[in-house]
Figure (cartoon, rainbow, N blue to C red):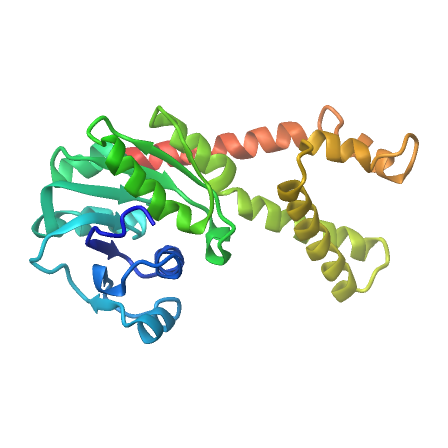
Length: 271
């Protein structure tokens, strides 16, 4: 994998950090090349330490690393970043997956250096995520390839050329899994209202959402084409879509939801 020869410091061994780490190790990264820094060893990290012998520390060491990946919550970035200076070389690449933490905020604490700001999503936990990424002007082609290799351990990586678009990525795919989970909740509740037992309605909803998602990934057809394929004129699906596609239906609601998430991501970068 790209980055296999670099020494990597992973700051944060929570669910997302551990998901990426697991992908690196399964792709052949030597465990000795990684140090995980986290005050504690959580449930997601423990199996990787036990299986691969990954090194763990509760604080940032004085040794230098080629790549530092920031997988901590945005709220702790302010205190976490300054202590990283001791672990950085002048050309060390910094990759951040913290929502709302701008490149400028990282450079304010770590100095001007190559920085990649990325936004993965929670399906990364099962290797089915997707990540939006932005590289500042100091990231050369080799550094971008390293970042791409590390981030793609959890799924495809889509690069954007403007940092402001990362907030839009956050609104669509970063926060998007929660929208889908809520869709499944609502679909199950609607099934209950229609008379189904609660457990059956939930099983139907979960498998419908998961199956439709998998079909979209595997099919070469667009979602619009797939929708049309299952919609018979004047049939049951058409009756439901007439509600969802009305002027006050799902489309304007989704636009407002994505806009709200994007606006919040922008606000986080100013806090």
